[in-house]
Length: 147
Image (cartoon, rainbow, N blue to C red; front, side):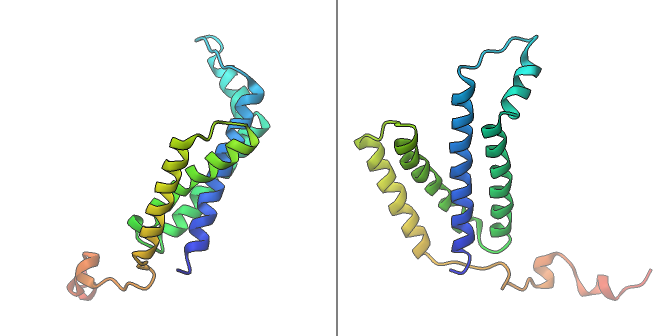
């Protein structure tokens, strides 16, 4: 359970990145590109302050996720990322006035219930595991032999 804060940090930075990207794309307006304007338009998108901040936040989120993956099982950590959808849906409702109808609320409830079930399943830490030589694919004979 000591890695839950790192997992939640990953979730919330992922959600924040989505919100920043949306804000950036709203400030740019509808996108249209032609073969002649594609490169210029891509630079305009990437270097929009909100989009750029969102991309940087994604990098931070991914770095956090990689740290988490080095410590816990993927099947434990990855489902928590679905909570980013919950955060995005709720914040999008308040910030961007997006629709949050009964179907979406029911889906959010199911996501939350599933995440709680996964959290209750327990956590196995890779840091505490000591791989055996056979599991690591190395034999003691390889270490002892000299060329």
